Amino acid sequence: MLRPTMCISMARAVGGMGHDALTSASALELYHNAFLIHDDIEDGSESRRGKGTLHQMIGIPRAINVGDATNVLAVGLLLENLSVIGVAKALKVLQEIEFMAQQSVEGQAMELDWVATNTSNLTDQDYFKMCVKKNCWYSFITPCRIGLIVGYPSANERDLVKYLAGISRFGMILGIAFQIQDDLLNLQGQLESYGKEIGGDIYEGKRTLMLNHVLAHSGSQSEKILEILALPREKKTTDQLAFIMDRMQCCGSIEHGWKVARSLANQAAEIFESLDFLQPETPLRPEEKWGCPVHDRRVLKELINYVIYRNV
Image (cartoon, rainbow, N blue to C red; front, side):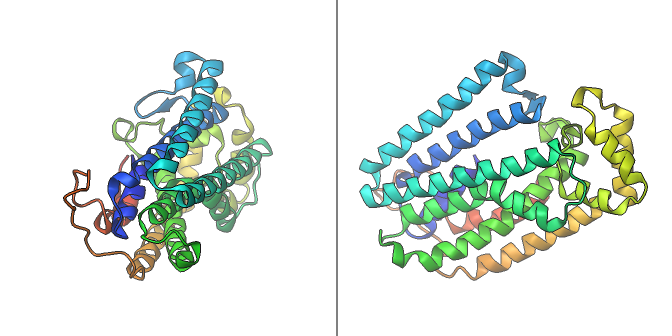
């Protein structure tokens, strides 16, 4: 529930009511689950949250339909916003969701194309661009932007331009750090806590920061890595997986990922401290239907450490 938590916390951090953001936050979580269902099908992933992926359990046609249905349910919630936060803010939230979805599918297209063409010459900047589109908008930037829109007293877009730009920068940098950490966990995490197949990104041929790095620094061995990556998932062996992981260790690719993630998290922390429009603490009001008093700026600040030190 990372995305709805950020949305609600941001709304409260600017003085809004937590329950006013609940409808939008729920829609974000539904979109997230729809993306995961379709993403797992496109990637051929075998596990998610410690269990088999949905398409593994009920088949691809039914899983696609569940993902579609989840998107429809999210639209219904966004329409409920008309009565919850008013027409002006509801339409602005809808615009944010539309842009988020566009960015996400463009980022997914980039990643799928890299896998399909067995691309070998990608840089850190290429990865950052894909990551911002595929992951950062829907996981960090949009939840924070929507929370700000819902919670801020004014519905005038001109009053929000500067604030939206600031939290967008924060969400972008933190989102890239989050995804690098996720990719590192896929290489070195514990299955029990991580909940997804260890090494699955290599089996799927995903161009992570670490894979791009090892391809750029393996010399003549890069061709062997590319030959392995070109194989269908079911034809890759554990020995081949171990070979690529060993090359990553030898070339410092894992260490490179750790360093970049931590550097980005430090940048995110600096940006966050500059967001002086966020209230240090937002006490619960008598009329506020919210049970947790720390869902405000404090949660958002703690996320910076969580992103790079988590094991799930």
